[in-house]
Image: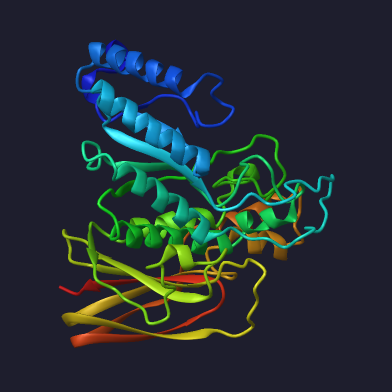
Length: 383
């Protein structure tokens, strides 16, 4: 690798040994895994002394927590480096997993991904890490942070996977990422990155419901727009609060799903001073319906002058290729004209025309949020 790509290219790479060794993917003992990590770290560092190595990429279950503790203890006993600590969490394991049929079947029980489950698993892993002061400052990477397993099953296996196709998923993911940041405030060990394990599935039907960012013909699903919205937040987080957010200060007291909430996260770009605000309405029930909207009074303090206001939206009618496909009759052999109509609506869409406002210390906006939905408001100073 070093000869092929060069030191500058591979320096940011993270070298992680194995995948979920606390379950059947590893057929040896934990002690044998510790031995393999010992050998692997020394081999990598022998070739590239500043390579970043870590692990152990365990699951979020009870076995994962036990394995993580044993791994960190073994590394401490052997004086082994850990440049990052990794583990996984999943929001649901639908039971039964499969009600298989070529055209699917109704879900025997309506189920949804659980934010509290994921937060509890992250909380437990951070607590384990904090028992080892030597490693507590290492970046924590939740390198499979996914709302459900498995990746390759979809709505024809279990109808509960329908959320992967529609607006529910991007709003869920936005909420989850913000709650993980809130959880960081309760811990010395910190989640540095949380990523999804997703990929495209060759030969699948349109909106099959697999855990992916794109469906057939490379059409982007609404999930992609959650990450586009987060990318607009800038490099400096701003204080932002909501009086309708779900409280996670006591994770042990949370049930299986968070109740309906309106919450917010905001950031600022240090280069141009623009302010970005994400506001969402969500509940951990993909089957919940409300024909009305919730009024949100948004206030931004500490700004003066003339500002341009941009408003983007993810909901059933915006930034949603799935809705367009469904309104066209859910074609599995779409015409070129239908594909063009679907792809035209797959990106992050404006909810309203841009406007200008003169602000004297406090900006006030009113939003109407359906369930579920997310609004991205970007404020740019007029120069």
